[in-house]
View 1 (cartoon, rainbow, N blue to C red):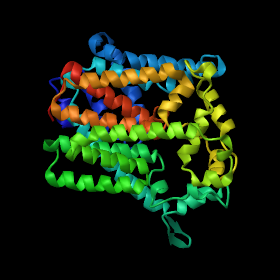
View 2: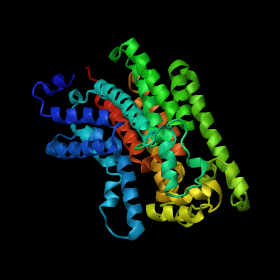
View 3: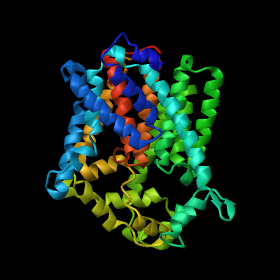
Length: 415
């Protein structure tokens, strides 16, 4: 496949295509490598800036607006220009630029998806090896899947909270990745294999799917399991997929309404805190941290985190957890309101609306795959501040831009 790409009739864009395929493969494996590839892609694209497709580029206007809102949010923290305000969300600008310069024949759509699947398989194998290695102590010889987690806790508190204890390799298994986001990657790969059956033999699909399902279970993420169920329903009972999304979001909204009506004293009693799920406490804190004086543009990124730190409980298991690490909103919709205001949330909703509208012109096969991608993203953003972690942000932007480019340039490519 790569040999065919490099011999693409002498195409001057073959290097960009190769980098794009490399990014797809390394995205699930290593964040630093994939970030480096994005930088190389952007730098190489600048040599062909005159070839940019303005029609494709205009689809990503909401991304540019989001980038500017985040830049303004970082600026509000210190009221000075810093490189940080441009770096954290630069992928909102980089990937639309790259895809708008590449020609349809240079975007090997099916190969990109195929390499992403192989990247997820490689990530699973590497994570498993690392997990097993970190579960072994050689002096004396001990094999304990919670070993690394206990060691980490001893550094901060010998009586560490049970909330931080490892379960079935989950901590050791995803040392460099957010477990829920990685479960989303694996779920997406399962969907890709089913919709691109001609790219994988039947035995390969079965073997890879089993590996990825086991991987999702090992990650120990409740939402990761829900996303797996969603993918399986979307593949085998597609009519139930939309109702499932609606039900989960309705449950989330009901939860927000119920906890917003709770008295503050309920959340400061240790016995009450220890009976609640982490995110219930977090969402309650976020709702009480949103400043209505800054509801339109938010409070800024660092200032938002300071508000959360100030309002988090100081007692109980969760109180311990909140003091040893920075905990964000664990919900992207609330995080958007907190950092960049209702305006940021509205722009994000516009992104989703434009995506849904655009994928309707795709072939049915890819349209269903795009719907699964969108469902997974919406689920992840419900329990994680996904745009604030690279593994969530890069996944969203990459597949969003890939799908939009496919529809705008009709660039489906063969192997």
